[in-house]
Amino acid sequence: MRPQGNLRTAAEALVDQLVVNDVQHVFCVPGESYLAVLDAFHDRDIAVTVCRQEGGAAMMAEAVGKATGRPGVCFVTRGPGATNASPGIHIAQQDSSPMILFIGQVGRDQKEREAFQEVDYRAMFGGMAKWVVEITDPARMPELVSRAFYEATAGRPGPVVVALPQDVLVERIAAPPAPPFAPVDIAAGAADLARLREMLAGAQRPVMLLGGSRWTAEGCRAIADFATRFDLPVATTFRRAHLFDALHPCYAGDLGIGPNPKLLARVKDADLVLLVGGRLGELPSQGYELIDIPGPQMSFVHVHPGVQELGKVYRPHLAINATPAAFAAAAAGLAPLDRVPWAGAAVAAHEDYLAWSETPTEVPGGVNLGQVMLWLRDTLPADSFVTNGAGNYAGWIHRFYRFRRFATQVAPISGSMGYAVPAAVAMKRLHPDRTVVSINGDGDFLMNGQELATAVQYGLPIIVLVCDNGIYGTIRMHQEREYPGRVSATTLKNPDFAAYARAFGGFGATVAATAEFAPAFRAAQESGLPAILHLKIDPEAITPTATLQGIRAKALAAQGA
Ligand SMILES: Cc1ncc(C[n+]2csc(CCOP(=O)(O)OP(=O)(O)O)c2C)c(N)n1
Ligand SMILES: [Mg+2]
Image 1 (cartoon, rainbow, N blue to C red):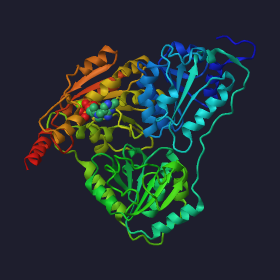
Image 2 (image 1 turned 90 degrees about the horizontal axis):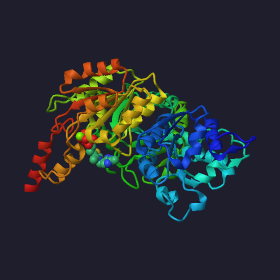
Image 3 (image 1 turned 180 degrees about the vertical axis):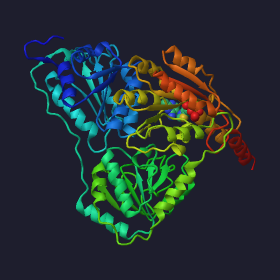
Image 4 (image 1 turned 135 degrees about the horizontal axis):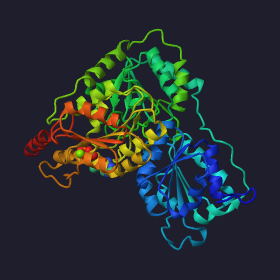
């Protein structure tokens, strides 16, 4: 749309506000409902990634929010576009990632008639988004878009939804841009820190657990300093392994699905748990069994940027409302204790972690995912991104891959399938110079595998592993536990995933034996193309330590008993 005098359209004002707020990437699927915004992108310095399905676009935006701490931005059309985008909103909620979803909406003059693709977004997203707004006054575009950035990042970050009536977007306004936004930091108070030090001084067996969002690379360095000075064993919670260097002598392991029993025992036996940033939800808390609700059995210190999270599930003995990065900086400055009764505990916990993750277990079949993870951890540069979705294959990542750098694990706490390809596309778009490996199950991959076309379109050589065991493995595992021998709706007949990659203009190879993995990975890298490595996994290799047959036999025996 050509400018008229010095008036901008509301759509132009919107895009200008994104520029003011330093947005460099947006992810979208186009729609006629927001043509004026697409037109405004035409002349502005923002990289637009056009995707194949709104679920993929929304997950890309969420992944940007997760990895950068600044809102990831997604544009979709009304009705079907918005409903397709909903998984991204749910992930942003559960993963506490800042994200803004802009949705084209029917014109104001058509509202409340159930016009074509009309949806009430407040009702639809009310329970998932932090804030939902429909901008009905074009002049308020700068103000409300600015607020969306604050809402998405304030306290505990999350998704914001902004509906844009079509006729609002084309109106011309005189309102100037709002000033640039900056996320609001929350520092821990001196009294809280003094109390924390006192509690540590009285402890015998403390552990620190890390999770959540609002971390920075500096914050991670500071928390490592704090752990070193106080000799604290440190565990990361489900899918936040990148918050602490796996080879740091205080690292005790990953507290998620299928954790090291020795780590679980250590947390259960702790007399002080310091939880920084996370919520200790259902998965890291092992089904809410690890720590008593509402009154924890041990001294419990909870540090969280969202004041509403403190005391929501676990009543803390000390609640500290702070962003993890700010807390870490302050904690690193605490004077060390003269004597720590738990001296040596961190080193012992780290030895347990190394022993647990060092050597892959034996599994049935030609490809051992444990060996694959070992090769990746020994070969990939430390700043490589590893993305995944949901499925039992992820258990090998959590146990055997070693994250060394902040924000390199990009995976949903919400357990959403279909995440690994969009997240990889987003990371490669942001960081073309870094290696991006996307790890998927066979069920998982085909939920958003079509975004491989987006990788091809933008020349993004991501390397996608598809772990093909011919089943929705996680559900089959639960099925064998609960209904042994009664296989129902969990079997898959799969395509040739290597040929799928080639059909998209990418590189494809099939890996039927562990020894074939390294050469296939090298060939994928050398191709310079987005690549799929189709890994043939034996369905019996359902976890690093269990087979389907074994689970079935155990369940049948229990039924017979
Ligand atoms: C979007 C979505 N749908 C369904 C589920 C339930 N679910 C969790 S894991 C899983 C199976 C994953 O299968 P696959 O990707 O093949 O991995 P595998 O477990 O076989 O390694 C399903 C269906 C989910 N988590 N997310
Ligand atoms: Mg599978």
